[in-house]
Image (cartoon, rainbow, N blue to C red; front, side, top):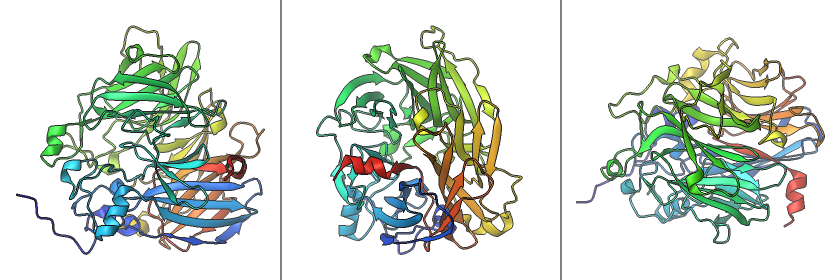
Length: 497
């Protein structure tokens, strides 16, 4: 008999729907936002970011916070002024649920729990980047959705004019700053539960030049990856997929504390699937990649690592999951010799033992040796007013009360603390000029203000990192997002209409 679902009239009482995490469900445009301080003329472009924001009340009781619909923010900065626009990506899910006036999608990436059958289940809610004149709204379970960068209108699902060979497309593609190529991949590339990974490289005008199929040792999550001049590296998170579990209404992902972290290393050009090597490191949670580069024949991968299951809402087979208050990630450097026959990696080098994630670099140094890293940071000495904010924080979003800037040459760590009732989201870096030294520029980050229950855009000068260059005030609250990117106006204008 079909399962009877009662449509709710309020969001569940789960903490991921409460406080600042309460869905916003806002679309609109606000011109000339309030600005305190001075925005330099050099900051001329648009900061795009995406947040998971359910447009309808889910019928899943404990729906994870990042199962929400992709809602794109655009902060256009020019001449010291900021205009703001917010639009939902018009995915198949969004369109069909609006027609039905209710939620139709079931559990996170489990089609067997849906109210109807979808052709593409994507929520397009994980990353948004600019490529070949369009915005790509990405979630790693499908092809990206293509949007107009000026209007945020959804153009449609992007298969790169029929060239995309994979059923999936990473939420973390990399742009080569020299060639302009987009380097990407899809895991579970032949469908749910398949171990197949498809790697590809795309020219700046959208032509596929490399397509390599390989098979992973486990069907696990590959959220981010690393690219150097000659190599690509795929870290597998020990969250594994089981189709039979999904068919029984279970969760897509289950933590496996007995699995190593696999690092698949593949030549970037001219490779075959058999050329991949799956190196191993002790069980951990590999998070987001800072950058990777080559030196003396080795590949160095700088990445955030936690010794606990960061996605604690997907426990292990016995139901064990860590206390989220005890989860922390630190910056490590893995050194991999691609020619090695011993597939057990040497211990990684700890670069920063302070809780940090959502890393960014000066993108001009992507895929080559970098010296500067920027990231979200949890600084327990900073003076956060925990009694005031904890009742309204909500659940799911990892708390980071500061931004960090690490100089890897000197190990000097600069911290920006936005305030005692503030948490920071993922930053984006804007160089001071096209010829500025690495790391010399400005950091932009959306900030949650739990005193006002509104959002702010903070701009920080890397030369004076302890105070804001400018704070931009929004008259609305934006739910915490995942990822985003800065796009210079000259790059969008050069692409034409």
